[in-house]
Image (cartoon, rainbow, N blue to C red):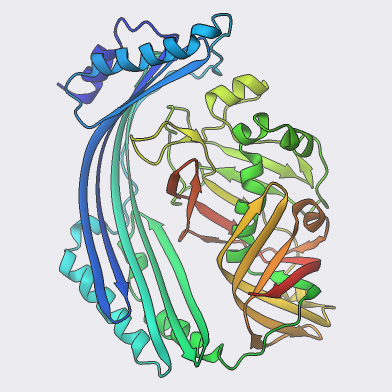
Length: 458
């Protein structure tokens, strides 16, 4: 029996207000290098499913590996939801209406990683590791390569049935150099949707990363304080994802009174050059898909336009509870989890300035590139750059030690005084929320300039 027939049969006669089923197959390969050696090879094939049921606004969830008896799984989830709803029988089930879709979505494939042998992948990773170690002064290296194929069949009690497949490739390469107790590192992360080619022809990038790691041992650290900083598209993309994107996820907002006060529609964040967007309808990105894990079509959602908050990200439930339109942002990392509101591809739209315009007039600033991570707590953020260079009299000059950028998001957005017209995207990251990580996402931005940004040594 086909997945569609199994799902339709299992949903027939269900007693919940709403019910949906996801059936999933996934295959993945992961190579991990620590130092000079290949530390781990992990190849997995997984098959399973999940059922959600909602009764009087309460959800039941059942996850399983054996998909033979879906009707009993539907009953399990429904019984769980009914038990949770026993104390709130007057609570309605609120889900934004979505037109039912029946569709089969083929994967985006440029160069299929499934057609590349494991030995070829190992040989190429070995080659990159050898390049790292040809640089004098390197004491350690880290390489992670991964690819994953995920096939999902989804059906719900509203009549939707969609089957779609996505293929991801991701790689992280870093080098560490040491001088006594001083350790410095440099590296990069890349990823692609359905394209093994992103892992090929990286010799120059690997050489430069190893060279930067050694060079940072001689680079001077910066004294902390407020300076004008220019963020490259990679770091600015991470900034809008971490510092702003999570605040745009509607479940975070309506469950938190403080965020309701901070993230109200119509709030002004900065100048007319600030325009933020999220959406899985951005083609060819790792955060892209045609339907989310509730069967809602992907969209491009304006979050900020001309400096004003105009939108946020939704599941069907959060859209109904806030009386806003669903955006197709309900995502689950696998069948083991229920879908929750997540970002997809989050980016800053192009401005009108050039990179040279941003440099003009900066007498003593810092150009920061790449990233090593960070943290946010509501409107407060801290990010570590991967590279930093002095700006003097409008010119990018010598490398300095990487720095941390920190501050209040809303004050910082007011200080973004210029946005360039050279938007780029990075697909080498993953997002974590609610125990589900790393979820494939894309981030993007042009260069942006921030006045009076607080920096400190990383």
